[in-house]
Amino acid sequence: MTDTTRESDQIIRAAKHSLVVQREGGTHRPGDSIGAGSASAKRKNWLKRAKYFAGAVLTILVSASIAGVILDGIGFVGVMMVALAVMAAAGLFSNFPKVKVPKRSELSKGDPKQMVARTELWLESQRPALPPPAVQVVDQLGVQLDALGLQLETVDPNHPSVREVRELVGEYIPETIDNYRKVPEHLRAQDHAGKTADERLTDSLGKLSNEVDRVTRRLAEGALDDLAIKDRYLEYRYGGDELIEDMTGKAN
Image (tube, rainbow, N blue to C red; front, side, top):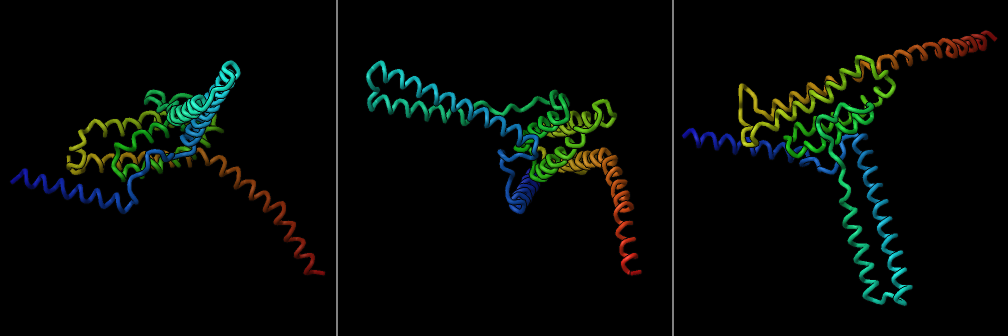
């Protein structure tokens, strides 16, 4: 009876999970980028592939030309071999070199722009193992990391907030996902101490997302204060003149 009940609970959870996925438009496509940092890294990789492919095609054509001069033409068979060689190069360099997924130990290294790109690529590689609600939070984190990276570019590398960010991005976020992945897949949807592993992961990532947003806002406070001061100055400098001109015109 207990086994039957357990199986029924698992079936109900699976049905709920399927319904959530359908409502959310299906799972996120693996090739999609969660942020500008990871998208930029992928574009650079595609440019590298294109250069390799162009070099390969040039080598093939030059080799065919030399062979044609030596052999007084390469004939139909030679033309087909050249075509096959170009197709083989296209197939090879459409998948090579691969975008390198950074190791967890590398996430907090480098300048802020590199750190953001590495973390986004690492998070993207983890998405297939995460439940749909957690994937949504990861996608949100990608946007937040882009904003955070822009703020960090104008901050002193020795600023306390930078060290806090490296700890948050390089340790807490990946550690949370690593802890989840240690749970066997068939146990992730089972209740444990009031929540499932799927629910705990989503809740934890949500808290981390809020913390990333808080740090970004704190780093942006200086820029916001400067903008407010400038706005008040312009209002005093130009808004006041317009007011005087209006009053003068009415007096005349």
